[in-house]
Every structure is written in structure tokens, then in C-alpha cells.
Image (cartoon, rainbow over all chains, first blue to last red; front, side):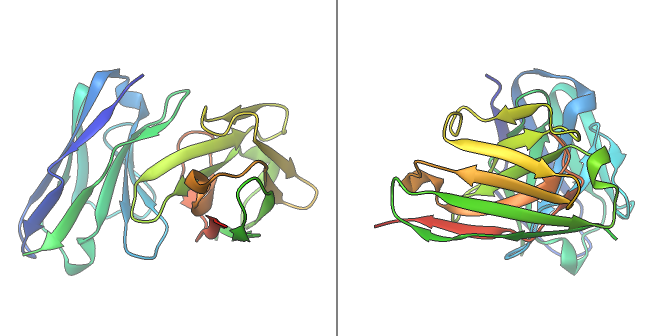
Length: 107
Length: 116
């Protein structure tokens, strides 16, 4: 069974800075089946990226995804105040699985 | 605009049953697979179950197989999750979502608490 490990657990940055979040899989994941979600407190998750690098509808271009095989990255080029949230990666093969999340907090 | 509205959550004793519903609007419901994802308090996301657009195929996480049943009524644009033999570890917010494994749209969730 694939395990997704996200790092760091918590990332403290300031608005305007660049954020780099990592998702590492224990086995190779088809890059066509890796997604990223954002979740704010008290809200449902929101799909950001699918297919490792494709932005979902309405997602600003400051969000980008990259990677292949076992290592994937979510980059937020220039943090806005509304970007501080928890981010989850997900492999969406036949048995979908989420990572444990990275909390992005204001420094 | 896609809207998903869950209902049916609440407090139930261990071993009890509960039925969740999700009312969908803003898209052609029968054309999309639908799923349930849950989140225990303060924890991460866990995929629970999914169903094809026609309802002919269903999928379950091992943790709920044999206890939960997913179904849909395409004439009423409604998704359901029948939960039996509930355990304390089933306590979570349950989200209805559009898709089978990749979830483009989510409802706001309904809280299920299993406790005596």
C-alpha cells in the first residue's frame, strides 16, 4: 500500500514569500493521479492541482505543481493572506489516499 | 454553480446506524461518479466510498467495507451513505464530493459522533 508523506509538517512564512510543500510517495505514483487540496479552518477542502501540474478551475496562477514518480511539489509563488491553510496531497488511483497535510502558517 | 448539501449527521451510540444524504445541484448528477470522504476531529482526510454515475458500481475503503452502503437516486439528485455497526473511530465530518477518486467539488460536511 502506498504511503504519502508530506513535509514539512508546519511551514511558517510571511505574505509575499514563496512556499514550497513536498509530498513523497513510498511507491511510484502515476503523475496523472496526484492532486493537491487546500483546506481552511471550518471549511471543506478545495481542489487546487490535479495530474500533478494542472490547476483546477478558478485557481490563481501563483499555485503550481510539479514532480513525478515518488516526489511531488506544490509551490505558491507569492503568498497572499488567504493562502495560509492546510494543504493535502492525494494519489487518486483505485484506492485513493491522502497525505497527512502541511500546515502553512503566518510567521 | 455546483452545490452539494449534506444532512443526516448526529450523535449515535456504538453499534448504531445512521443514514447520510447529499443533495446535489448545478450539474448533471447522473453523469458523475460521487464519493464520501471523512475527517476525524483534528485529523486528515480519509476516502470512504464512491459510486459510479449509474449506480452500478460501488467502492469502499477497507475500514468501512461490510458496514457502510453507498447509493444514489438520480431522479432526485441525491447521494446516500447508510452506516451500520458504527464505532467510535467512525466519528468524523463526512463530506460528499463530486468524483470517484479525484474530487473537484465538495459539500460543507456533516458531523457524525459515535459515543455512548
